[in-house]
Amino acid sequence: MDQIIYENWESTFRTVVLTVLGYLAMVFLLRISGKRTLSKMNAFDFVVTIALGSCLASISLNKNITLVDGVLAISLFIVMQYIFTFLSVRFKGFKSLVTSQPAIVFYQGEFLDDEMKKQRLTREELYSACRLKGYANLDQVHLIVLESTGDLSVIEEVSSGKISSVGNLLKSKFGY
Image 1 (cartoon, rainbow, N blue to C red):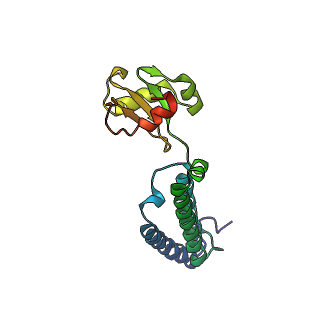
Image 2 (tube, one colour):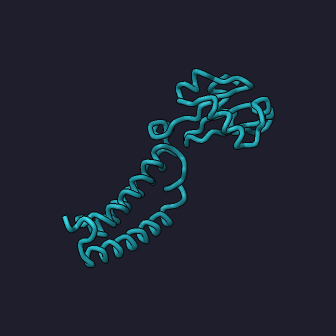
Image 3 (cartoon, helix red, strand yellow):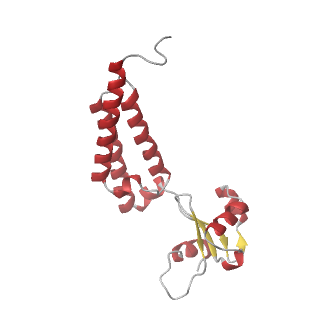
């Protein structure tokens, strides 16, 4: 019971050293792995981010995990992330397994209630997204998209004849 608050200086020193070394190793590995490793892209990326944090915490606090074991676990998560993103960029079927598609939840003045229910969104959340983008009312909004990251994109209008970031999404949903 006496070791709940303090065990000994050796334990404290070990925690400090392993936390610093684990942190430096993770920063180094993330830097060499590229920007995509911790990007805010989809649920899979979020899981990897949480797992990396858990590995660092385990290195810091679990006396049964060595620095080498912890860095190896971090490295494996980063390598798996790289493999999954490599495959999802090259194979559409694989991408659909690990990422969700964007969903149109508001279009040309109309809430798409069925899609909103499916995506578990409320009208208040859409209103909030519009306010954050500076729109006073929905008359100014052409389209609201729930992105695969969970972000809401608010589009003012789609000009015909120009390259559009929502063109394929509109085609798949409405046949435009």
